[in-house]
Length: 395
Image 1 (cartoon, rainbow, N blue to C red):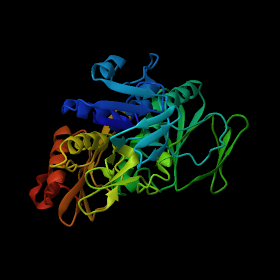
Image 2: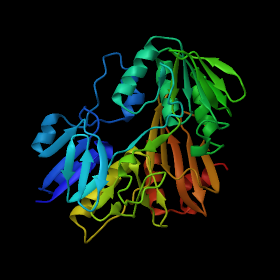
Image 3: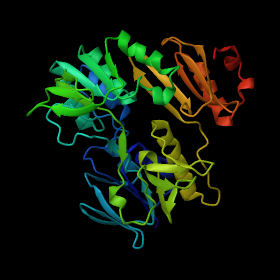
């Protein structure tokens, strides 16, 4: 009997387990995760898990009965230590697991440049992280967030909804400018300011001061900011250390895969830990919830129907809920040579991005139908000349 092992009880890990069973795989299926909790969804951690009045519940994908009904062997609280490709074995903290096919879905952890930080300094990646942060925000005082990316601004929105005094420190000249460009990012930033968030841009944090609890942050220009709670939101690091010496190609960014998700002989990877080759042959990591879903479905197909392998064809899609608005981002909004705004306010933003006359990305707020259209246009590489919204927008 074929034994498929999934290492990583992440979104990608759970979705590939689901897809394998849905496609009729009847062999042995094992899911290994390093947390004790049943696999759960992470986007709510920066939003409802922080803000709901009722005691939060872990947002699990399935209850235990589902795994039993689908004959999935769960090995939770079991961290993978190493991989031997030759013997097809995974060494974990609890022993050795053999496999016929392996799927690596160990995800990523929050980047933390302040490893010896005092109490009151948080990163946000797990349910326990969210609970600790929730308690500190509830205790009152000044919340300072290092990093004005999506996680940072989502936490800022949640903290403000709870009445906290919030400051966001961003090294760039504008939050999200690297993601959305200088024409669009100010609209998002202004929404945060309008809701009482103080922004400090073009500055980095050089030191955290306080024993045993955080008291101040020191900026690169020498300024000091008092703080009662600090949240670090400066990106993520893929969990690949356990693959050292395995012979797989592991870059600083991720496990390198071909365009079908294959990392080695009968070894695959999906989600935040992986970098799949695009049609241009360049491996890229797609740190999006929807990308993990798509990759998982494609992997299940490619494992079970190897004669007809597939690539992920859907356009990248990511959303962020901030201050009562959903920001929808489709495709590539970083590498473009033209941008047009069909509307410029935070209630109904529509920014369209092009490269070489092709629509490659969009940022849409409050226009669900347009967002769906953009996903279709971007996926098929539509020319901007074919798009009415592009032609009526302003440069």
